[in-house]
Image 1 (tube, helix red, strand yellow):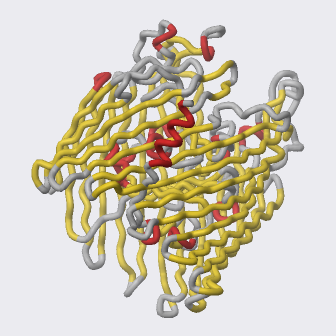
Image 2 (cartoon, helix red, strand yellow):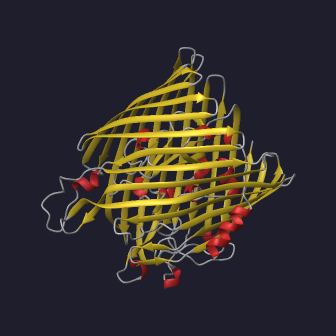
Image 3 (cartoon, helix red, strand yellow):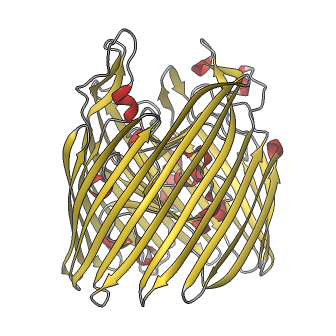
Length: 602
C-alpha cells in the first residue's frame, strides 16, 4: 500500500520545469538537445544540487530514475551506484571526458563516497549499455560529470556550514574569463565526527570520522577565432574511519578501529580546433586519472593499492548539412594497477540523420581491441520523434561490454596455481521505449520509459577453482517515470520513480536492487528572498548477501534566504521524521540531523 500511495501521490502531481528542449546532452558524444537524444537520460544541474543542500554527489545521482545507491555507512563509507539493476562495477563514471573508475578495485567500479558537488556544473545519467560511445565498462550506463566553467568577468565565492555530528564544511573559489584567457580555482573541505558505520541499533557506539579536501583547477585560452585549449584537474584527499569484520554480527560488521586514506585525481588537456568555417570540429584529449588507497587497523598499516589510467582521444564531428552529422574517433586507454597493466584501443563512428524536421535518427558502431582479450564490436541505435511541441516518442537499442579487470586476471587462491586464463568480457544488450508529454500551457510534463536488458558471461569468483569465472547471467526489465508540474508561479513539484525486476539465471532477485524506488520533491520559490525544497525518498526492501534490508522512506527539507544580492543563508534538515533504516545490511544511517550555512559572492 505504501508503494502504491507513493506512486499515486507522485503521478497526481505530475511535475515539470519544461526546459528539456533547451538542455543539451554531452554524454552522447554528438551534443544533442534532450528532445533529440532518443536514449534515456537524466540531467541534474548545480542549481538543483544547491537547492537541495546536498553535500555529496552520491545523493544527487540518487535523484535519477533507474538508479540505486548503497553505502556502507554514511560519511565516507564505500558508496556504489547501480543503473537498471546492473552491478556498480558496470557503471562507467566520466569526469570532463576522463574515465575515473578505480583500476585497483576488484571489479573496477567507482566509489562515490568522496566526490564533492561544489565543483560540479551538471551530472548526466545515461541509462542502458553505452559501450559504443564510451567503450568498456559501460554495461549498465554512464554517469557523465561536467565540472564548473568560468563565466565572463571575475567572480569569487565563499561558503561555510556547520551541523550535526560535529560537521564542518566550507570552500572558496575564484574564477574569471576574458577575451582570450579564463581560469577557475576552488578548494572545498569537509569534516565530521560522523556516526558509527556499523548500525548503532546493534550496540555499536563508536563514531567514525570523515575528513576530505577537494581542489579543482582550470585554465584555458582561445586559439584563433573559435579554437581553444583547456587544462583542468580535480583532486581529492580523504580520510575515512570505518568498522571491522565481526563474524556473526548483522552484516558481519561491528565497532573497530579501521582507517582508510584515499587520494583520487582526474586531469585532462583538451584542444578544440574547428575548421571549414566551423563545420568540422576537431577535439583532442589527453586524460589521466589515478587512485591511491591505504588502510590501517589499530594504527598499523595494512592493504595498499595504487593505480592509474591514461586516455588519448580524438573526435572529429562533421556537419555535412543541416540534416546529416557524422562523428568519427579513435581512443587509446592504458590501465595500471600496482605492477599489472593492460591497454585497449578503440575506433568509433556515430551518425545523426534528420529525414524530416520532427525525426532524429542516431546510429553508432565501435570496435575495441584489448591487449589481453582481443576485439569486441558494439553497436547502438536511437530514434526520437517529435510530432508536436507536446510529444516526444523515443526508442533505443545498444550493446555493452566489460573487459575483465586487472585484479580478476591476476588473483588466485585456495589451491589454484594460476589465474583463470579463460576469462572473457561480460556483454549485454538492451532496448527501451518511451514517451514524454508536455502540457499546452507548459506547466506540466510526464514521461515514461520501459526497458529490457540482458547481460551474459558475468564474472564471479568461484572458490571451487580458486579464481574468477564467467558463470553468471542477469536480466532486468522495468519502468521508469519522471514528471513535473508547476502548480503556481511559486510552487512546483517533481517525481522520479522506478520499478525494476532484476534477476539472475535461476530467477532469484539480484542483491541490493529494490523493486520500487522514487524521489518526490516540492519546490517553493515565492517572489522574494526565501526558497525551499521538501523531498521524499522511498526505497523498497532489498535482498542483501546475508539477509534482507527493509524498505524505508526519508524526508528532507532544505531552504535558502537571500539577505542581499551577494549573501545567502541556508539550512537543511535531514531525515525530518527520524526514520531508522539501512542501505546495506548491518550499516547505520543518520537519524534526524540539521545543518546551517552561509554563502558570500563578490
